[in-house]
Amino acid sequence: NNASTSNSIHPLVAAGLGGAFLLNLGILLSLPPVLRGKGAPYLPTFSKNLDTTFDQIRRQLQRQQCTSQLVRNTSALPSLSKEGGVVSNDVTSFQTWQNQESERNSNKKLQFVDLGSGDGRVVFRAAREGLFHKCTG
Image 1 (cartoon, helix red, strand yellow):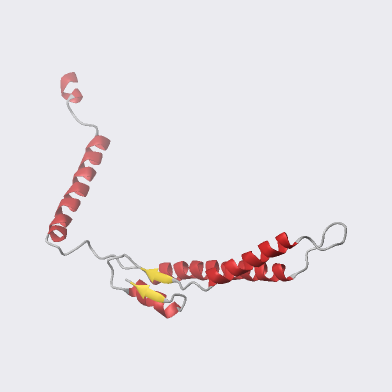
Image 2 (cartoon, one colour):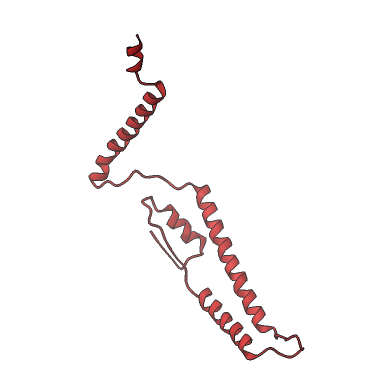
């Protein structure tokens, strides 16, 4: 009697092995279409996820524009030293350089590239948003 109980598998271990077997079976059954060149299974991107993504992109671009305007505005202000005189031209020239760099960076045209295997709805949405110069996918 004692020998028969030591040879059985605990129910949790059996359930874990059965689950692992089913997962492996699912992977093996999905391989033939991939090997035939049909590609991976299509998983659509939901509109809620797209809304969140493009809201974050829009906020980031607004932050960059605000920072760029702040740099431009501070470079136009006269810099005063503690004694009441104007600070040397080095500070002003650095601020002017910062201003020129931010203008150059803001003039860069943004490109959107989607490397997914979907139906193109992300690329179409990016084009509709009007945030990008070029959308590819």
